Each structure stands twice: as C-alpha cells, then as structure tokens.
Length: 89
Image (tube, rainbow, N blue to C red):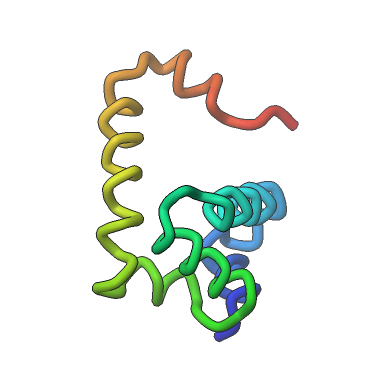
C-alpha cells in the first residue's frame, strides 16, 4: 500500500481529514525534531506508510509522545471546547 492510499484508508476517504493529515505531515517535515522530519518526509515521498511509521521502533515513540499530550488535554476539555476543534464545513 502506498502512502497516499494509506492516508485515504486512515481517514476513511474523508477529503477534509486527508488534507488535514497532509498538513500535519507538512508541519512535521519542518519540525525541529530530526526523527519526525525524516519520518514525515519518508511518508510524503511514499517510502514509508504512516501505519509503518506509527508502529516502528524508530518513529513510534516520537509520534506517541505529542499525541499523549494532546489526548490528555482533549480529555480535560468541555464538549463545547472539543466541538470548537472540529473544522467547520
């Protein structure tokens, strides 16, 4: 599976989510973290799928740490604050 199909699969074909995921990868490709830059570039270039990156020993923990920070903050939000995170169509 190539990286484009992987992103579409992860987002269940939702174009907004796919675009958001690509923006995140673009952001990570400019990150101060060299491992995240390497991973994002490899995913964008089709050398690695996002699923492979997330489950790899090399990149998995680098991806998990910021997600855990987000998830902790998300769980503390009110339903209204969570709704405000969702993009408006």
